[in-house]
Image 1 (cartoon, rainbow, N blue to C red):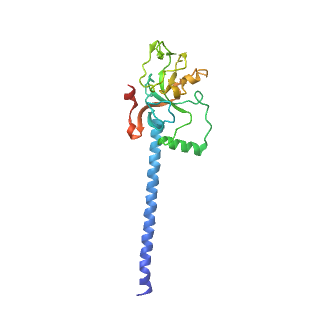
Image 2 (image 1 turned 60 degrees about the horizontal axis):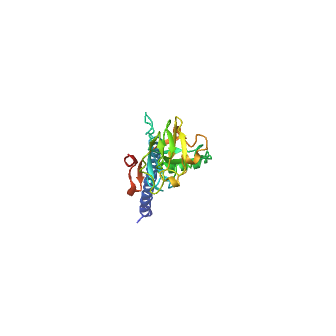
Image 3 (image 1 turned 30 degrees about the horizontal axis):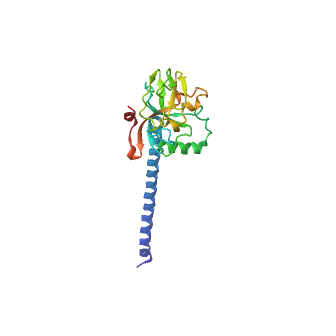
Length: 233
């Protein structure tokens, strides 16, 4: 065997190794591009169409439980759609239900956005989920002689109330300004809602402009997947 023959197998292994590295590098590139595409698709969908939202508290029990992932329809009130009494909405409470948040910085903002896009974390510390009880022009009163909330003089039927809860232990009588909403949690004894901010600007109401979208589905966990629209009627 010549010296050159002895070197041939080594040269073959080197070529194979180079091809392996090339294919691995290509696979990494394909994987990275696919992942980036998926993130961009999720981000675009989350920004304009449907956004997952993690339920952070028990204020909407037993309709929603802590840890539920709801799918928020961000197109529900665009193109002529109107917010209706009984809708479960997600809204930005900054300036009404909460102080204006601090700037999380570029990295913090990106991480929060990415987590919110796939439903792994809250979109913002100022986002809330509540049920619409009164819309602009409504007079909402607590309570009639039977303890029911009245809207425009009519008692409100609330089958979604948490078992054992009264409609409200806080008395109020408010006329909802146009373009604003009176919202309450279904778990009334565990919900800081419009009643909590009666003395604040807006009298506890929130602006329709702050509504992010309507919660239409529970998407996770699988055992609780169902339409909130059909549940609420």
